[in-house]
Amino acid sequence: MEINYNKFTEQELQVILDAARTINFAFGTQFPSHKEQLALLIEDLHFRVINQIVIQTYNALRSKYIARGIDPDAPDFVPDHLEK
Image 1 (cartoon, rainbow, N blue to C red):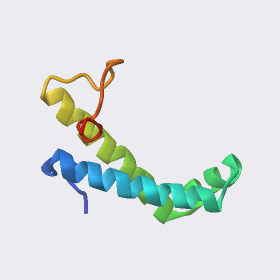
Image 2 (cartoon, one colour):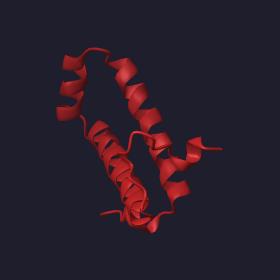
Image 3 (tube, rainbow, N blue to C red):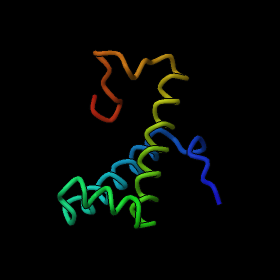
Image 4 (cartoon, helix red, strand yellow):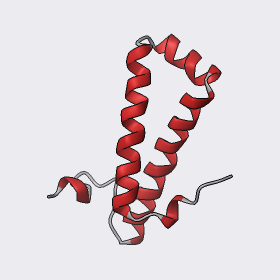
């Protein structure tokens, strides 16, 4: 099964991204060295899935900004959720 991240709103994508990053961070604190994290990435399906969620959600958010004419690579770019 493949998830179409483009069907989510920007707000939903931001919630997903924040949650996945939190889980990813928790994995990282359990395995603090780069070598351990690399081994975890190679060996653990759950860690790989969480990393893919982070990557795909981030890319979907970028696409939505670009579709609105906003350059997410611009030096003065501030994501909508941080402007409040």
